[in-house]
Image (cartoon, rainbow, N blue to C red; front, side, top):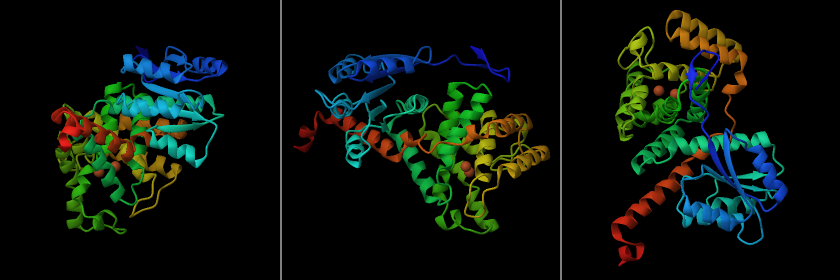
Length: 373
Ligand SMILES: [Fe+2]
Ligand SMILES: [Fe+2]
């Protein structure tokens, strides 16, 4: 256990297990040097056959595979295709590394199910960032059932319905991670906050588009319809087995510390702790982005507004002061990089759902051929 600057004990470093492929000895050495213990446990091999053999004998041994695109013998595309179609490791992030950025390469890498194409020469810090994000995403969404994945896919579609919230959930997931890390919260808490980030407004499924995208102030009746979304969302999120903590955040993300929020008018610490953490990041992102009914405000005004609202008693003051500290000292940490959350794309969720449905059908019917007959 380590102590962060807020004096809160945080979890030990979690090791990320990397399997790399490169046919060049010097590149293998530099990969080994880039991904060092204790953060990384790195195995680097020189042939596609070795990658396939390692993943066949120990499919759960690695968190990410980095494949240098190598034209000799079994190339990276073929290895990637085997990982997806023969070994059925749909959750395992696969990054292809190449110096060819042509469209045909990008398309080919997408066709074989690679998560990303990293173009050489790359900055090793950038590469490490990509690996961190891919592994974090894998650990967050690993093992979810089809119904649970479908819930995330639905939430993505609801988000797309709202013209102005584009990217809100990704930014929220990122902001929650930064804030939770500063607070010294556990990986499980970060996982809860991330799930809530993607799902919190899923109840807007029941809100007509004309209200969601209305450019002027809503009427009382329209606002009453909008106010039903936290309750509807928390009911829908019951699909997530054993994650009542997520449903709790969804239900209470519009409560206010002074009791003036909805749907239950909870006050102070009766609002669940993670919901209080979450709503500060949600508020920050909604104020700092354009919406149908308002323009984004700049950081100076934002700092003023957040601290005024906190003084008025709308939000948890202790939590807000930690957040304002991040916003003052390290505002860039809160900015999400455009590529950070593309691994949680609708396409990826759909691919995993398709695979899981196919394998469950196969288990029930013996084989596809049996099923056709
Ligand atoms: Fe909401
Ligand atoms: Fe939100």
